[in-house]
Structures are given as C-alpha cells and as structure tokens.
Amino acid sequence: MITQNAPALIPVLYLVAAMIIPMVDYFRSGLSYFIALLASISIFGISLMGLQEVITNGPISYHLAGWMPPLGIELVMDSLSAFICVIISASALLVMIYSRTNLVQELPDKTMGFYGLSMLFMGGLAGIALTGDFFNLFVFLEISALASYGLMAIGVKRAPVSAFRYLVLGTAGAIFYLMGVVFIFISTGTLNMADVSNILPHVEYVRPVIAGLVLIILGIIIKMGIFPIHHWLPDAYTDASSTASALIAPIGTKVAAYVLIRVLTIYEFPPLLDILSWIAALSIVAGSVLAIAQPNIKRMLAYSSIANIGYITLGITLANPLAFIGALLHILNHSMMKLVMFMSSGGIYNNMGTLNMARMRGFPLVMPFTALAFIVAVMSMVGIPPTSGFFSKLYLILGAVEAGAWVFVGAILLSTLLGLVYLFRFINIAFFRPYEKYDDRMIIQGESRKLGLNDEDKDAGPKIYETMPRNEMSISMLLPVLIVAVGIILVGVFNGVLIDKVISLAVPDF
Image (cartoon, rainbow, N blue to C red):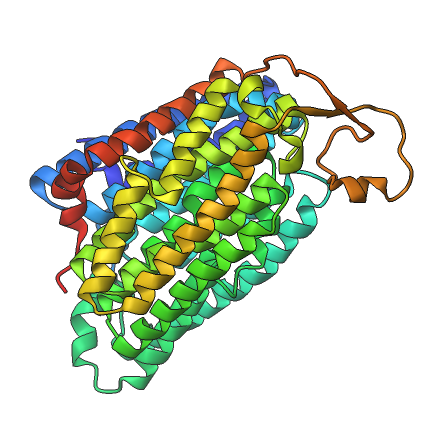
C-alpha cells in the first residue's frame, strides 16, 4: 500500500512537515528539529521501498484524484526518479542530523525558519523528480526555488544580497522554462510527459518544438549553474549558513540535471546536444580553473561544483550508455563528496574560527576524524581508486571515447589535473604547515588585506605559532560526515553491483 502511494507520499510528507513546523514551534519552541528529522526518516524509508518496488515490479504511476492522464495529474516513480529520490532523501536526512548542533552554533534564533524552509525545499525537489507533467514540474521548481532563496538568505551579512542575485537569475530561468512549456503545449496539445513523447515524432511543424526545447533547456541550465551562467552559485553557496550550503549544494543542481535528462530523452535534437556538450566541457575546465584562485574553502568548493555539474551534463549529452551511466553515477558521487566537504567546512568554521584556507594550518591535529573524511572526499573528487569518483570519471571517459570525442576526454583529464592543484593546495596548507593563531589586538587599517583575511574570520591580529588543542565536531555533526565518507568508498568498491541492479535500469534506449 505504501509503495503504490510512494510517488504522492514523498512530496506530500515534506510539504506537510513544512506547514506543521511553524505552527508547532509557535506553541513549543525546539520541536522543529524533531518534526524535520521524523519526516526525513519516514521519507527516506519510503524512497527505499519505492526503489525496491520499481526494481522488482516496474514503474509506479499515481493519478491524483483518480483522473487518468493526460487530462489528470500524474506522478511517476520509475528507476530514474526512484534513484534520485533516494539520493535527495538520504542527503536531507543526514543534513537534518548534522543541523542539530550546527544551527545552534550559527543560527540559534532562526532554527524554525530553517527547518520549515528546508522541508519546503525538499518537497519541491521531490515533486520535480516524481511529476509526470511539464506544468507541475514548473510548480515544484518554483516551490523549491522560493525555499532555496530563503535558505540562502539566512547566513552572513552578504547572504541576502547573494540570495537576491540568485532570485533574479532563477526567475529568468523560470520564465524561459515556462515559455518553452507553452511552445510544447501549442505543438502537442498536452502537458503530460509520456503523452508529449508519443506525439512529438508526429508533429508536422518542428520549429515551435525546437524553440520550446531550447527555452526549457536554457531555463534548466541557469538552475544548474553551468558556466558561463554560473555567477549566482559561488556567492550563494559561500554566504549561506553551513547547514544551508550542506543541504542545497549536494542535491539542488543534481535535480536540475535530472530535469535535463527527462527533457532530452523525450525529444532528442542532435545539434542542441552538440552545443550542450561543448558548454559542459567549457564548464568542466572553467570551474576547475576558477577554483584554484579561491582563498575561501566554501567558495573553492562552489566553483568545483560548476566543474562537476559539467561532468554530469557531458555524460547526458554524449547520449551513449557508458556516458549516461557515468553521469548518473557522478550524480550520486558528487552528492556524497559535497555532503562531506560542506558539512566539514561548517565544523571547521565553528571549531577553528575561519573559512580562509591560509589559516587552517594544523587542521588534522585539531579535527582528526573530520580531516580523515575530508581526505576521502578529496580522493573521490580527484578520481583516485577505490573511491566512487574514479569510476564515475572512468565511465565518462569511456563514453567520450565511444563517441569519438577526444577533446572531451582531454577536458576531463585536464580538469582532474586542475583538481589536483586546488585540492592539494589546501592539503599542503592544512596538513603540512604549523598552526597559526592571530591575537585579538587591533591591527592597522589594510593589514587584514595583506594577511589575506576575510570577513568570516573571527579574529585578526599578528601571527602567533602554537599548538591548537584538539577540538573535534560534536557527535551529531561528525556522524553523518563519517557515514558519507564510508559510503564514498563502498559505492566505489561495489559500483558494479549498483550499476547492474539500479543505474542500468535507468539508462534510456539510445
């Protein structure tokens, strides 16, 4: 019974939790966390059951109010959407566990707002993954976008400005998407995705279809943060609170990539695929180059996300099974890497007082377990076996070789080398240099700039070399970080089983 209703239960439970949290918290402060945690546990369990049901018995279709598609609204859980739902629900659950201590340290007066918005955000993402209707996808897209604007605005002093920039670009993306849906509706007379897929091959006038497809994809890639339409992403991820960054960065752009998969599998237009492949390759290289120049660890991770979303896009647009497997595996891999890294950066900020990499000397001595998990994520991002990052990049390279796209093979390898530069620059500073402390005495104007300090630093003054006492994250923050770090290795070791049992079922017929 639960599995047959899973396509509706998953987004509805998130949205119900978003409504209950402010009402309950008004009467008894502090219950927001437990409601969000309970909802996240329940939805993760339902997602796993739904994935098992889909693997065993095929897709699950849920018709709202009993109205049959294409007239009625349809929610569909197939192997691809079930896979995405497990990723986003698992990420949300781990971040909810992590948030218990982190929010008290960073946002003690805004916990209710954070949990309410986070459930609303997750409800929108789950709806995007499960809807079988183009217009309702737009509705869920805007639900998740509005919630993400609020989550990003809860952060440092610059956070509202960064969130506003994302709002402007996000609104433009939504307009493009909606205009594209209008063209598709004019051409086919339906908004149901399965119905559109059946009708499009018989449409006589192709130009409106292509125009609609281009507009939809333009709206999606703005949401994905692909270079050169990426300017909202680094500021938003950097200025948001640690918990908000840990929630949004691993899954927000991946769900947008899922929408790209859905659109391109409904109507394949080779010239557009070629253009997107080159944009993806440019994003892979540009994101890696820009990451090298960043002194702030969260900003460096944000630019690396631009490169990694380029990997996923390239795997989708190469349109062959090996590349597509690499793209889906990298969606999972990158979600895990960014969970570890952004959750770790929150602990570093709270326990070491900075996000500036130049001031993270002695990191493994201060936070040894966090440092170990971070190293695992770094190995995965670079692509060192047996981590999952090695295998997702391997499939992407094999897919590019199969397509005869040697330039894209070069882009992946170049990005990997650049990743070695910016990630091991951080390791060189944090792991192999003595700890530096700055005293609290007032410094002359302009000296902070010479020292390379940012507003995130909690103190500023002359350097004092000493041994910083061990100050590991609390167990509620550390546990999800370690779980995901172990998961990165397990996915790498058992990637063949995962591909055979789950991912291969989601690969379309090319």
